[in-house]
Image (cartoon, rainbow, N blue to C red; front, side, top):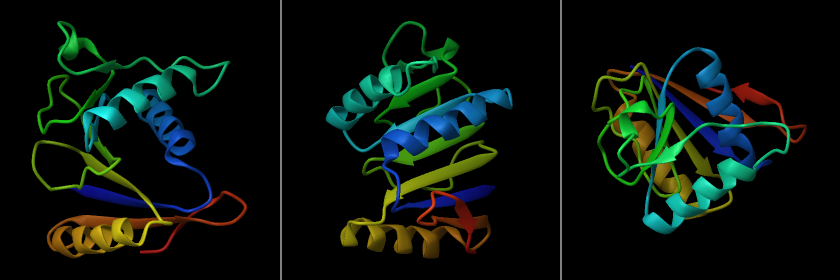
Length: 147
């Protein structure tokens, strides 16, 4: 399984995640976005609807009658009701190599020392037996593969 770690330092989650979700949908993949708590899930839901005026990013919140049909589903749980190939972990959700996914993507705030420490622990736990890649954003906004 491929696992990508994105160390957010230059741009916030609200700008990076929608771009990655758009690329995911362009590939024809579905995505599930796991968030640490309901408040963050609500904020992310709102953010994805309004992130850019010229873009529509189809998504939904879990618990609805059409979860299986959503191209992007935001959840606080560990399930995969829309049959996603990609699972994102954001806002306090920590990755684990479970499920039938092609790729896991962990986006974490590089300005919070506790979150960085959690990311290091996740890297250590997941790097054995998985293809882990670490991406860091340069001051110009470009992503650079570091590991």
